[in-house]
Image (cartoon, rainbow, N blue to C red):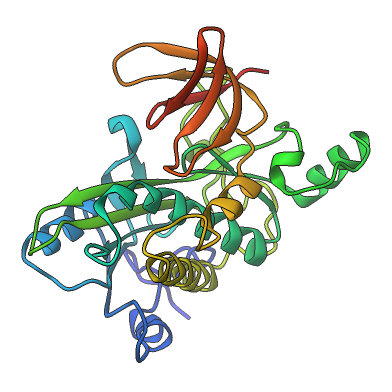
Length: 311
């Protein structure tokens, strides 16, 4: 086979996604996903889906970019995605009025649960969440070794330490006016086949280093099954959450989130949007998805902030 310059098959370790096959698999009767588009390159999938929301596009649109050149994360962090090295996608959801607007803060945490469950199962890695929705991964072997050293602590990811984890994905949720009720755009960026030299350098030694599924030795680094598993997990949790009127306890979402969140039980320093830093023990996640921190001045419930685990 002759590989032409500029062909998406030039690097056979990073084959392109096949839109028709994904549409056949994921757009099903009575399913959440109603339209799925794979684009070669875009500035931002969140911006593309937000524009569709303002144009009153129905719920269920999925846009996946093979390369994203102006992606945004939480706190306006920006990054560039090498072509076909990761999964960069955004979805359009319209949970209101089924879910009260006050419960919409759970959507990025819901996406985090879908991420950690699908990546852990398909990639066969130890996957966990850093509050609110950063995906952390490490090799399953490294997790087994730490558990043995600690006496095989019982419980989910929160029962284990944080050594060896790297940040592999993040979620950005944005509310958009478009239609009778506000829409929510969920953007997800997952590092799959990036090499170490394609990831940002670690500037803050207290932060988790960037990593990819390939770097931690995931069993599966094929983006097709990873994408299918993620979207099916997201649809499943969304259906349960909406079916419970957005109640995180009735739907089981809060219990699932807490079982995967390694921030709970750790000493943390949380930088708030206004510049204040709250330090203390992260004791729980409340019914509104806020991180509860036992600080020196008393318990604080934090709705947003940049968390550092104090080691």
